[in-house]
Amino acid sequence: MQNFIVIDNATKKYGDHIGNFNININIKKGETFAIVGPNGAGKTTLIRQILGFIKSDEGTVAINNFNSWINREEIMKFTGYVAGEISLYDDFTGIKFLKLVSKMKKDSDWQFVEKLIKHFDLDASRKIKKMSKGMKQKIAIIAATMNKPAFLVLDEPTSGLDPIMQQKFKELINKLKKEFSTTIIICSHIFEEVINFSDRVGILKKGVLIDEYNVGKTGIKELNKKFKKIFEEEGVL
Ligand SMILES: Nc1ncnc2c1ncn2[C@@H]1O[C@H](COP(=O)(O)OP(=O)(O)OP(=O)(O)O)[C@@H](O)[C@H]1O
Image 1: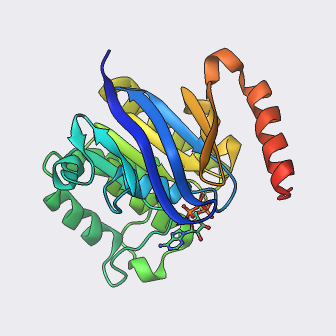
Image 2 (image 1 turned 180 degrees about the vertical axis):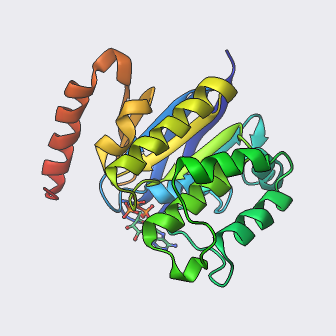
Image 3 (image 1 turned 60 degrees about the vertical axis):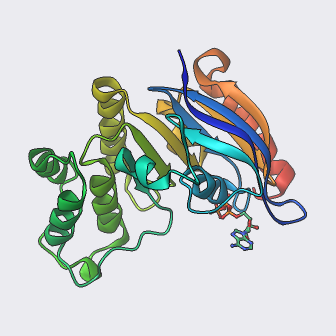
């Protein structure tokens, strides 16, 4: 099968060991690839390169054969993105915001939005500025997934959610994978946040992809050990 995502030697330098260096990742359609690494490892920078928000100094990223820097608008048509730092229209109610996003997205399905609001037990009638972090997170997740995107990018998506809602999030991701073959990139500094539904995981340290594993083949227990060791070496535990 052809690769849906090809990250070829992507480099973005902000300084010595700061940024990303010669990243190579291939992801097939329908696969979920997790990027795990400590704070400052370069995860968000890589996501920004992938989405064409910043230009790589070297190398290229292609999504479904579109160059992410040159064809960003084309890519955005079939891509959903939950950013690490969520910014929404504060004066809108949740519903008004979701309606606006739904109008902007070509294939959005309002019935699916209503299902998602129920699924996440969200009171979307409140103004966004009065919402908790978790509620805003739910709005961002619904906005990113309402059109069942072919490609979904998630930057620490469950950081504001309680364990029940994290489970509900996993159910949504599994549905998108199963029913719509969505290709997913998810990044986090929390191993447990991503590992259960990822097919492969890459470990990013100081901007270098130091290891890549097949989750099924290596096993979650073994991966947990490897990841803990890296965090210990970084002195963050
Ligand atoms: N625009 C920028 N200018 C200069 N340095 C930057 C810029 N953006 C990111 N950096 C630096 O690049 C490094 C990687 O940042 P990045 O946000 O990609 O890491 P991360 O792995 O996503 O971390 P976190 O888990 O804390 O979000 C950090 O040292 C950060 O300070």
